[in-house]
Image (cartoon, rainbow, N blue to C red; front, side, top):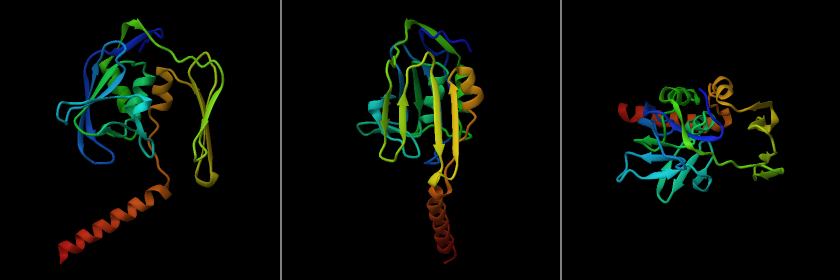
Length: 219
């Protein structure tokens, strides 16, 4: 899929993807629509009155714990990280992500279904130049949990990351340029995972809930 780096791009035609959402278990249908230049990525809640939209911008970021949530006023969209990463990496600047629930389909737990959806829709160049954030000197920020983000000047968009597991039990490192081809081949198929320590309370809670249901049914 050829991308002209200097120009903005949008979705070539409407394409849809249906499935089950991760946290609510609801059936949800998602559609990608084209959008005009300088529109950015917006989520439309088709299931709500007046079909409100929310911009996928950093000032609308609410939480990143176990999922990325965007919010504006009372409006929320959850678990949007896979569709957003796919749109960005595949070169889409402007699009409407329409959903009839508060989070997208989880698919197989990776960004691959959204890469496939974008390829199905196609990506079209628009007659307006892109706006770039030009990193001219090193920048960094650190979270209270010790996560460190460093921005360095480079001629390409490259990500280098180190992940150390709970109590530094293991370490993983990756450094790669991000292009549509590399993202599709190396990044998109990676599936969501959790540590057992994080999911254990949820599993125990679910098991206790099922025991109560069986007890009520047998009484």
